[in-house]
Image (cartoon, rainbow, N blue to C red; front, top):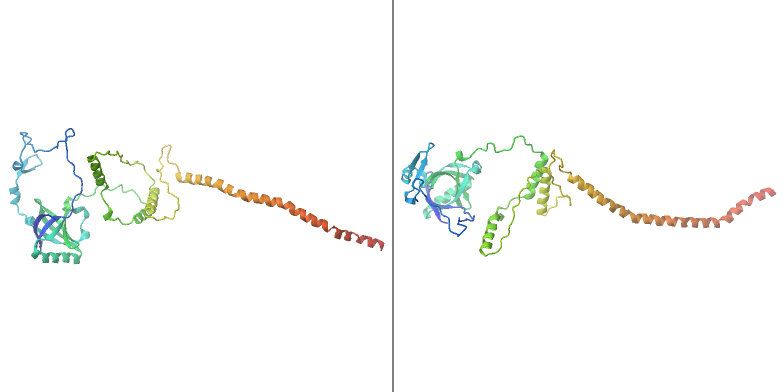
Length: 350
């Protein structure tokens, strides 16, 4: 890595020579401006508005414009004459827990490397002291002509420094929050918690810039003379959705994407617009769906009973046969009935 600043860390009476390097890099695709007709580059020139002539960089200086429009020139020599103790020194002001730093203050990130062999021991001392304390160092440093606030912390075996915005550079969030009258129900919070738990932890290492990749593919295709597809960006419908139904559907979709079964089978929650006072409002889609499902199941049940009806008919047809058999038996027993009928004759003869 190429260093962008050389100086030292002032840690009490200990001075640690260091080099400052950028810890981040931008992968954004940069474009040039050209003349569409002939492909010529469009360039900007510095022109004086009084004589309308181009001014070279050697004749250009900084200036401060007052509230009344007065312009006050300020040269590099003027700025160099100002006492700036942090011009070549990162002065540690104190140590605080990392939670004491508001993430809104975080700015650019840098790596600090020991500059030379003698700096290795005090560098390691400060690194291990930060690691064991669990705190971060708050420091002042100067870069690109102005003094800045910084935070030193340990990343692996390296001391990293984050530029911080000054506290008075952070705006208060006045008028940003929604109306205080908005109430969130416990059931909605439970579904939101379920959705968060289902989505799980974000794997930052797998995230990438899809738009940048699409731009690269577009440029490659145009350079090769290949046709470029015309895709249309999806626009939000602008509907006011039933929040509970939307949360339920989100939980269901997240569970399916993670290979989980939410215990609801094949049922899918219906997301529908909230009713308004207008005609043609939203219908109860869930109720209509259940009625339709009930109707579709009714014929199936009737069809299933038909075989049972046929069996009953067969049983009914067999019953007459059973009566005939009993009738035959009755015919065979008639002689016994005749013997009983002869007894009165004996009594008559007596």
